Each structure stands twice: as structure tokens, then as C-alpha cells.
Length: 413
Image 1: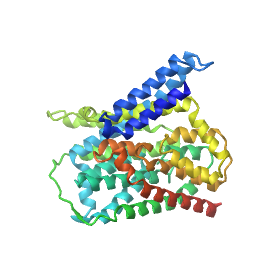
Image 2: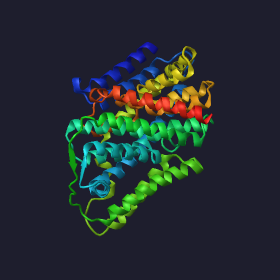
Image 3: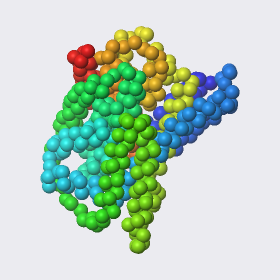
Image 4: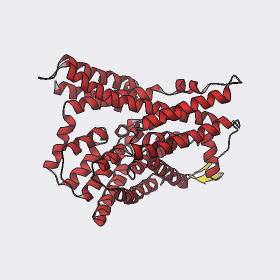
């Protein structure tokens, strides 16, 4: 049964890779194979596995998925409204000059995505950064380069603070790294982002003209933008001081958005804010559902735990580098959880390299991180194949950042 489940997982990932060839939406194939794998686990249980125990494991997976789904729904609703109001474009027009070179723009987008993802979660940072890129209306091949930059920058920014990435928080809560170590980790992480920006911007020679578009001056838009910002800040603070899950604070912020909208729109017939939930691209959510069901299945049959065996055959630092590469194929959260449960003995410098590798390594393939999946769902030019063309540049930047993280760890300890 393990062999069959692994085969199903392989076919599922292959269907993502070949989406442009088979012309079947990746959300449909991943959902099919993800649910099929759990049906087989129920129908042909391993020895000693009762239906109640399997159901308990499925419930654990569904709880994680539901939290991500609800969080995504809230974040995407905020972004959908702000896009409709033109507020993201208005922000761009205030920050950027009327004309800016594409090379310079690449570095500006990289820096914005890096800093924003350090303060917010990766998904929100990707949604906002991609919305920024799409608003510039560049040709597809250039938009693709900027999208690749956003994915790497978002994942790199997320490793510098416990608020930016779940795996960083997990390693910190296990007392493997300290806050000041993570702050210093932002140095090589940012350096690798700037290196990738230099590599990706080499062929860019044109200029982007920023032409402001007219938008209605609706004060409710400004109020909702303020609520979105306060929701992000509140999520960070409440998670650190009280351990409140981000999904709860984002749903609370969304409820305030709906109530404010009702207050402002009560005397006219314009669209209600609740309607923005209906314009969310549910392909993205279904794709996440299928992928996470698949990864949950791999976790339950012990595949993720077996990956930890790499530390028995390789030096620890080299194994950490490889774990980053593996995180481009397997979700980094269960991968990190498996490593923490294995109680592998590492030096503080080595734990710092692991924090970097599992946080950034997923950038090497578009399916390796939530940021990549969001980018693929939002940018038509981003497919598995088109993203993979830049894997060599991404590997160079990842390797430089990894080496820098080890150097910082050795200096600090």
C-alpha cells in the first residue's frame, strides 16, 4: 500500500508539472489524488490501524488545512477589495517615480517583498507583492522574472523573524535558536535576495512608466486599508505575546471590515463588502487543499520521518543544505516537525543554517512554498516549467544565503 500511495503522490506532482501539456487544472488533479490517497488509507488500513485512529489523523490534517483555508480566505478578501479600490496602485504611485528603470524596479520590488514578509505572513506578503507587480502591466516574460523574485524574497524575509515564517517559529519555540540570532540571519538572507535581483535584472533594459489611473475617492477604502494594516500588526503582536493563531485575528479583522462596510454603505446600493468573498479565486484554495492532503498522507505513512535518516549518512551541515532542497518538493512544516521530533544534535550555527534552508529552500521550485503556489495562481505566466527555468539562479542565491547563515552562526557562537 505504501508503494501505491507513493505512486499516487508522484503522479499528483507530475500532473502539476505537466499542467500545460495535459490541459487539466492543477487544482482538479491535486484534489482528486489527495482525497483518493486518504480513501485508500481508510479502505486498506495498516495492521493495528483502526478506522477511529485513521479518522483522528485525518481530523488533525483537516484542522491544519482549515486554518490555512480560512486565513487565505480572509487575506484574499482584503486584497481583492483593495485591488478593486485601486489603493495598492495608489500606494505604488506615491512611492515610485513617474518613470523608473526596470533594473532599479527589480531591486525595489525585492526589497519591498523581503521587508513586508518579515512583518507579515508569507501568503499576505505574496498577495500584496504580486498585486504590485501585476499593476505595472509589463509583458509576460518580464512579469515572470518579477514573480520569481517575489517568491524568493518573500521566503527569505520570512526566516528573519518568528512572525515571518512558521518553521522559524517552530525552531525558535524548541529553543534551538535565539531572537538575536534570527535578526543577524536577515543579513545573509537579504544579501542573497539582492544577488538574485542582480541576476534576474541583467537583461532588463527598459523603463516602466507609472501612469496613475483614476479611482473613486471613497473613504471606506482608506478605512479598510487601515483595518488591514492594523490586522497584520495585531496578528504579529497577539501571536507573540499570547500565542493567538493568525487565522483568528485575520477573521476578526475581516468581520470588522464587513461591519464597517455595512455602516458606510447602508444608505446606497453599491456593492456590499461581503460580495468580495465570491470573487476570490477558489482554484488557489482547492489547490492548497489537494497538496496538503497529499503531504498529510506522506506524513502519516512515515515518509517524512524517513527523510531524517539523511543525517546518518551525511555531515550535519551538508544534510541541512539538502533538507532545504527537499523542502522544494515537500511542505517544510511537517519536514521541520519531523526533524524536531527526531532530536538531532546540532550546534547553534547548524540550527541557524537549518532555519534558513527549510525557510528558503522551497523557493527553488514553484510548488515548494505557499508563496510559489500563490504566485502560480495569480500570474498566468508562472507555471512549473517557466519557473524552473530560473532554478539555477535560485540555487546560486540559496547557496550564498546558506553559506552566509553558517558564517553568521559561527561568528555568534
